[in-house]
Every structure is written in C-alpha cells, then in structure tokens.
Length: 224
Image 1 (cartoon, one colour):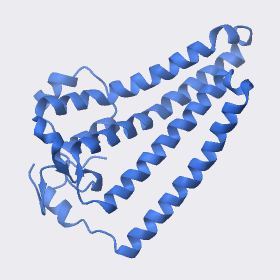
Image 2 (cartoon, helix red, strand yellow):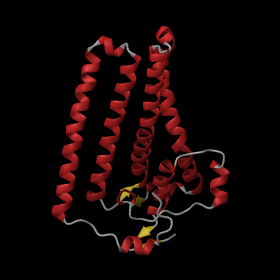
Image 3 (cartoon, rainbow, N blue to C red):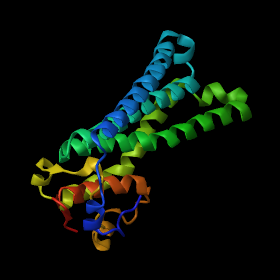
Image 4 (cartoon, rainbow, N blue to C red):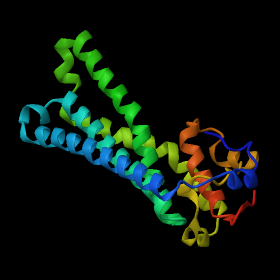
C-alpha cells in the first residue's frame, strides 16, 4: 500500500476510531480466531515432534517450518491489531522489533513454499537421487537461508533509519501501529545511496518508512 499521494492532514482528520462495542467485538473475534488456528497448528507441531518418520523427512521439516512461521506471523499480526486499539502510542524500538519479525515471517512464506515445490520436483523428476540431494542437513541449511533472505530484504530499511535518525528517535513514541500517519517519501539520492542496487519488495519498504514518519505526528497534523 502506498499513502504517499495522500495529504497528511486530511488522512488523519478523516480517520475515525471504532466505537467501544465495535472495537471489542473485532478484537474478540480476531483473538478467538488466532487462538483457534494456532491451537490447530500447535497440534501439528506436537504430532511432528512425536514421530521420527516426520522429523527425518525433508518435506515434513519444511512443512512444519511453514506452520511455525505462520503461527508467529498470525500471533504478531494479532498483537499489532490489538495494540492499534489498546494503545494510542507505542515505543518506536518495540514497534521496530514487532514489525521486522512480522515482515520477515511474511516474506518467509513464499520462499518456504518455493523450497517445498523444488523438493517435490526432485522427488518426482529425479526419484533415484532424491535421498542424496534432499538431506536433513541441507533442509536445515535451506531454512537458515530463507531467514537470511528475508532479513536481507528488510534490514537495508533499518540501516537507512539508523543512518538518518538520531538515537533519541528510537526512544520516542509513535502512532505507527494505528497506521493512519502518512508515509514520507525518502529523497531519491538518500535512498539510492543505500539501496539503489538492492531489488526489494514494496511490502518490506513501507512499514519502516511509516515508522519514520509516525513519530512526527502530533495531534491532527503530520509534518512531511
């Protein structure tokens, strides 16, 4: 999502919080769904750990990593949703940690699915060499590489934030988790200095830039 073309003042003045009943209803439903889904996923993890046939199969290892990753993503997304209603402001450092982990788990999902697809391709097309190619050790190496690739997508934005903002910035409080502050576009030369040669998805770029702007929101104005 891109809010760069929206005027900050009109975006905030047009934002209306839900009524108390509506907010409670939404949060109860979201929390109940989160607990239910994570309980089901938790039973899958428990079953996986109990049977050696699963723990020694690269396909099931990748699958259970996807399950655990989705559990983390769902839990953090629900937490951010509740925070956006419960707290008007949140510490920038805490918000950074929550956002970075949430974005990384989001980026992990397609990479993990791609790894599972490759494993299935090898099992179907090269069945005689499947055991030699898809070993347990290589599977865990692939999982580490998935997390490294996701981190490589989001960390450049963190480095930009560290380079362009004073340390006091990270002890401030932000409106970030309510997401009604307008995204500030980085200067082209500033962004190019750090990430011109790094192709990165827009999903990873937007939240941290929103964070940079959100702490500048005071009352009903956003200073862009």
